Image (cartoon, rainbow, N blue to C red; front, side, top):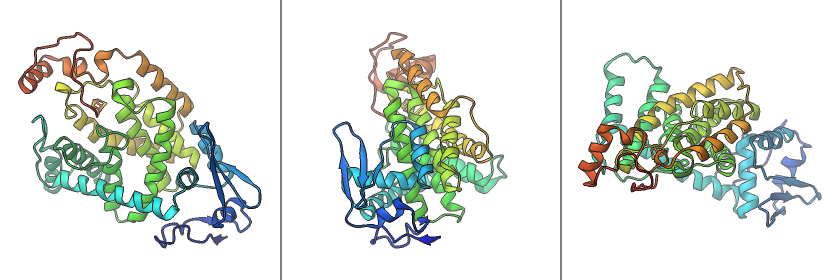
Length: 362
Ligand code: SF4
């Protein structure tokens, strides 16, 4: 085994994990600076090597992603960066630098969110992540330190979002806490570098791309399963890859995490991305870790991951409008939810009527 040449140049060391057999055509081709790339009108992406070999980098299903990665002995993060290079014409170094910037914003939001209470725009939330952070220091916790911190950081990002602070939508603002929460908690263990976290974002991006194209990542169209569920699945798969799991185990984690989110409705109180979004981010960060543990242990969902994504799409289509980010049904429609809506928005009680809410983009 020999290492490939560093792809990025500007970020020496970041891609040194790219160990390939010397005669691996993919590794060999990617090393060449003279490669051509093409994007067809149907959105198919491929790299044409100077050897004449074409590497198809399009994937619309998780199974295709696994086949692509396994057939070339690539990690999903590697597939994604090659696809991104081919599609955008941007160098690996630029892509990774952009990802590093995104991770810096995520980490800042997670740490800021737990450091002190932050009043939210709607006034429904603010100090929860800080409360959790103080609990870590003051008493033995039921959860282990990684899961507890992941929960606290995930809520921290939600609090920062609700306070109009800077976050990265992963995949949306409403579900922006789960991926950073888990990654920053893992960073705190000292087992991973920031560069590893930067790479991990590519894994998450590949998984999110499939879910977005096959189902939805928007609460307004697919319910909270599409936002928090997708974020949980992306995070679970990403953790598996960080811990050396195979591409198959990565998508198994996606299937398991999504399974545990199916049917989750979008019911923000007063139409604000505060409640229940905050709690769901925190608790689903723990779910993501649990799904990753299951997949790494070899546990598989009986229903294939792509079919789970399909089920999420179908359930989303079947959800009534009141449960799709209108702020009318579910928790928003409880007596307390309706009272808070009147208090905060000064609006009449919409009761259970559909289509009359004032949704906030999450
Ligand atoms: S409840 Fe709705 S707004 Fe809140 S995180 Fe879920 S999908 Fe987003």
